[in-house]
Image (tube, rainbow, N blue to C red; front, side, top):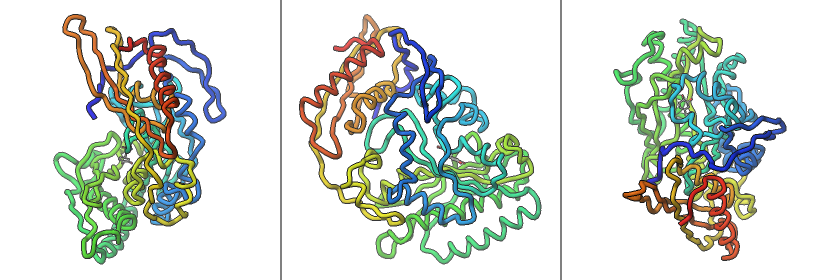
Length: 427
Ligand code: DAH
């Protein structure tokens, strides 16, 4: 979708008053940065990944059962500081992820984690060396079948002593994993562990980094085999491809894609943890790897779930289809009629407006009744230089037919909130 990216932050023209916001039982003062909505806050206590029989819970436990010797963490509050979410992981000060258009802030000093990596330093600081952490993460984003402002990730980390004993442990594990993978029907398209564009960190011995990167790859290939193996067409191997990547807290870094039902699907990011992150965690003499896995991505393909909103459905026609520990194909129960409605407006000349502001407002008014939002027109007036935009909202419930009156009422609310919050002129 071609959206209005990066026109900047839209500050509501109406004068805002600040107060306090109760999040998970604690009061926080609000300020000009506050951008969490009641709809988003209502998601915090749901914890889909621990609800028995829910597909996300089954995926979490499948990953956990693949790493039995690891600590399994899953009830850590999503309320973190930008320092935890970004600074401790060496995100540069101008990283776009920090912006209020991309992330949810309770106030200037407190936010909702945008990824499970936000807990790496805390968990390492507690002395954990092999652990998995599954949690809900929050990002402001567009509205369509595969984007939702809350989704789930599993973070996995392993660190060992940066000495002969630690390296022996890794070497033994590599031999075990290599043996297992050699006997499996898996085709791996690899990239070198180290390359000029994906180098060793200055603080590390390249031989150690090679062993760690190899352990990371073998561990993840065998996890992927567990999740996706045995589901290929007769005689077809499972195909996995490794790609060089960049993350602020890992070097070398990689992304992994799996070929499933005719498409390459990106499922995780990973890498060798930066020495700075380990120093921040008070474990300067360790070395290791980390990965972050997107559970909805995997769930949508493994269970054939066509729309990410379904994960949040309370409808028994959805929930009763699943059993804990079993991956089964979702049977759609019905497709209800869609209702498209357009809204066009002029942006005030001095305002900055981001499509995520619009999508968040729509979510706040209409929740999961919106299937997608597309921008259908952008026009800059040649004389006044004012910008006009047109968004098309597709209202469609997953569980029932919407009446015309209901859709009209929702759309009217979207339009009036647009004016109240952003002082845009509706056309
Ligand atoms: N946190 C990253 C994301 O949300 C995923 C990720 C990448 C996690 C690399 C990691 C890692 O632990 O090493 O996109």
